[in-house]
Image 1 (tube, one colour):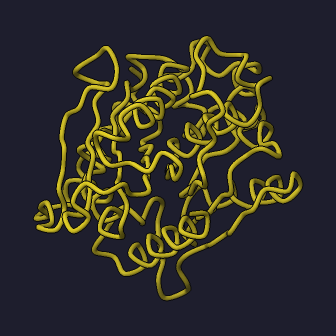
Image 2: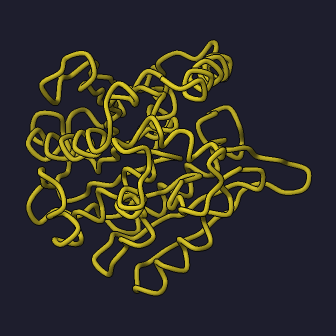
Length: 294
């Protein structure tokens, strides 16, 4: 593992622990924990969160694809954010996937696809409305979610992989939060994204690999509607405008937001801090966006 990935894991772990200190499972949330969705009972596991008031009636579903630069993160890190979404009237699926460098791309994309297969095949058991499946992804998770959507929308792109999304399936709508959409070949070799790609990609980010994970290039007309979010102090803020332009160019519905102002500097993935009023506003607006497609 590179020094960059090792340092990032340590820094993010400390930051996330401080952010969520004192949080507990809300009384109005019912949770189903540590469900195995694949072959690996350590990494291929997920939780389901539902509002207790809904009993087990079918609810629209949000699948959360966590970020962390491909080298950090788990469902445990995202549990409070995901339960907060569930309080807005959704069933929420929160899953872990293998991290780099222990596992290389496209393992993480295949596991993302596998979760959607699991959701559709277990809809009756967990009270999912299989006709109302949404998803959120942040940072590197937005890239993974976007590539999965590209596989659903474009058979040519999907054919590049040895696995497939559910037949005929496209999420109803998705939210990309502080996402990474493109890493150019001209990016500095010392930039954080390029350093992390060295651990993530089998060939350390070759030209072919950069093209394969260039989400902007793979957006097409069959892509689901997108809520595209960034923040005024997000270090990936400049990734959002070209993504919005591409979505508009191919006719995909998109609602763009940049949260924060001069008195309220909001950092990368601020939305995961459920005690932050701006985070609550963001989640409210994303869920309202999803409801437009029910």
